[in-house]
Length: 407
View 1 (cartoon, rainbow, N blue to C red):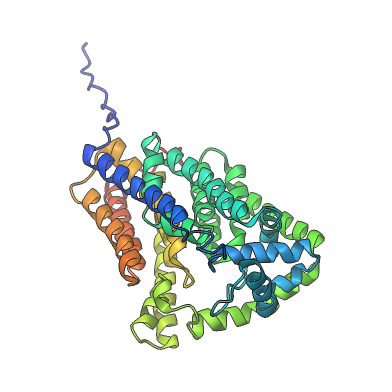
View 2 (cartoon, rainbow, N blue to C red):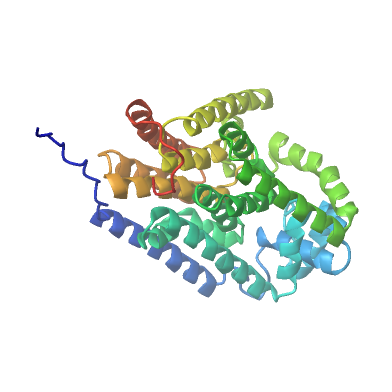
């Protein structure tokens, strides 16, 4: 008796990186590097002509670290004292404040950087945090093109110019999501360290609890508690009391009074305020978005969707759910984009996906050139692409067990 055997289902071969995608990313990466070099040579990065320090975001990190080294860590949260240290270091006054509002564990980083010459600390912070960011995007994409993709993100230049922590935030979120299937404890450590940005702490615990990733959840919780206790021992309980004391003033200034102009924030709350809407209306839109994103992301994580799409959805959702989202934090958008690129390189791109990603990049560049808050639009474009991919898998794919990030 003969038995007809059906041929094994062919496994799709990874596709070559599209030539025009390589060219575009190479061009954007070169623009970022050239702009940064030009900024340094032209003396509008770190120091301006005459040797005065340029008032920008990194000065609050250095000043907070200086107060720690002087034995006054709790005073880093006092806006007026912090500004006095900043003005003394820069050699010039400036309008407004570069206030320190990070939880006390981040004072470990600040005190380390304050021991270095200012220019070394500034540039070193940018380049050192860029390394794990590059590594995370490369690991997600799964080939060396990931390095170029990471450098091509238009916001990389802004993050570097102001000495912000967008590279670190993207690295921790990317590391968490890449490692969950293969190294859950290490993924939890990355997530626990992300507590220096507590505004990203909404979706992750919801998803981890809903999907039973207890090793990641417990590891993250232990890491967060350990670094919090370490900071309490190092900087005293007064630093935590000062943090909680000054947080309402910070919230009032930035989310009620708009001390940082609304165009600098890239959330739906800020967009409503930018367009003239009231604070209650802004919060209504923000909470509606938070609720819908939390439900959608949780359902995706509990569905048949491959892991890469789950990771992309959680990364983009983290951006959508926080009202406090400056443009440098848009570096995190590189993570869902990297997961989408990985999927496209493995299974082939849909006709609209790469043009849409190009439109997202154009929206980021538009912000840089015009100051119009188009970052929210870029996040929404990437989110729609993720939902488009997830929808087809949701309908047709069998429910798999959690697979490696390459799925």
